Image 1 (spheres, rainbow, N blue to C red):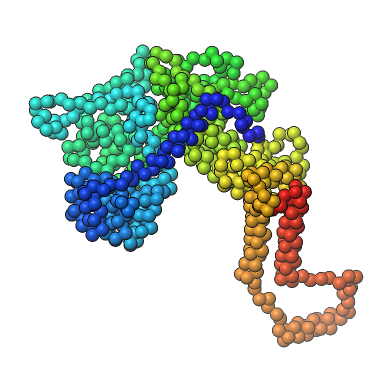
Image 2: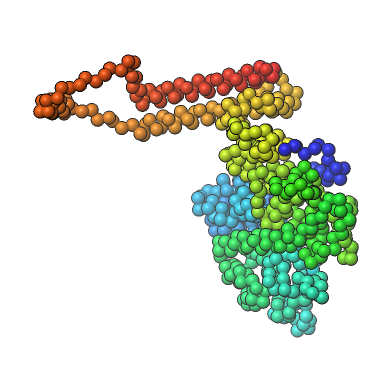
Length: 626
């Protein structure tokens, strides 16, 4: 497999530059997450948290309008102060009121480690929604962020609801108040059977861009329903009026889990469990939507005809952009036959689900893709230099957070994720390679099978050298470590390979301004894992010797004498002469178990020293001092 060319299209270069600038801006705004608050109300809140004054803390939360996640001039948020001073009730009140303790942040880590008691630490962990604890949280956060309509307004339907009179002051004078919700048709259809029936186009019927719900549905209850569908946080306790209306909505929209969630709203632990279940269901819903309306609706045409394709067909999927992926002429599928021709594949997708800074920058820039499209215009087509089978894995990750990547396509998927700035997918693919690849890589078949014939098709698309280079190119150190361990466990097969010399030379050249005494990272790792390999063998052998030793019973002299007497009696009874045994020509050496183990250890030590010596010879040959 060849590493993608370093020649990047001009537009991709601009997007990469804009991404770097935006990343720098985001880093400079980290402090905005926990702003410093020196107001009198916030100072009073911090002092109450130190004292454990639950009454004052509750009063300031309800009427003081304080930001519970702000910090004082000493960089301490109220939650950390209460945790540090050991006030369990105050910590619980702050958490239930919206204070955050995310384990993957500095403030969250400090709050956990400074907790005075184990009870407080366990309480903090119950409310921890951090990415390091819940891998599904980024997916849920993205869906809920769609309601803010920033940085891109991807909504395509307006749903209007009515406030009920009991929710409005002096409502007798103004009987009707309405509220509009700007939502996404594909998401509503994927999550609710009611919206699927209402919004999906049928014969002679177009999908509406606006919808007014029955007046029996209250706006407050529908707002909670929308946040539920979009996996947003719902922490408030429902009033009896809203609760009754949510029951109606759950029946009307076919959402039984909504009513179950509302009933558990008073219990934070049950509420969190219900929300986690709903994230699982949302992933299944959107995965089914992707399969039916993106994957199965994709259009495949010969590459020669691809430039003439117009995307009118995608309107029934609510897609607002098309991604194009071309098959490589050299990447012919096995068994495709002589008449196989490369195709261009067009995928109807939704900008709202393209969870990547690459696309965010593209759609918010002055590029053509960032311009608002009129409804009667054909959908824009964005070509990507990614194979269709790889793009399908990336899109499924976008829609459902699922990573279904066969090992033979893992390296291509890693490069695609790096190209599109999808760090989480890169990490997941790295894990796939480093775990599933332990038993062998697709391109290492020829090394494993000495009888394989060159060119017979048995060698896969990449080998361990490609994996190491991919780790360098995509900034995944775990792949380099995996490659070093993989080679160390099979060093006898690689030490004389010319490609191994090349990869060692490349590793040395990666050090800028390398001095003669500098080490080579790849060689250091191989030596480390080689030492681990032989050390583990000897430790295992020593453990077997310790636990498997059993005393060998020695026969007593009395028994031996008895056996001898019986034998003499038998010979005398039969009258047969005893035939002497023939002496062997050469003396037979009997090895004890201890001697066998000691010989094995000596052989392993010699083998270990020999491999280290051959590494040193290779470095001398390459004129490298490591």
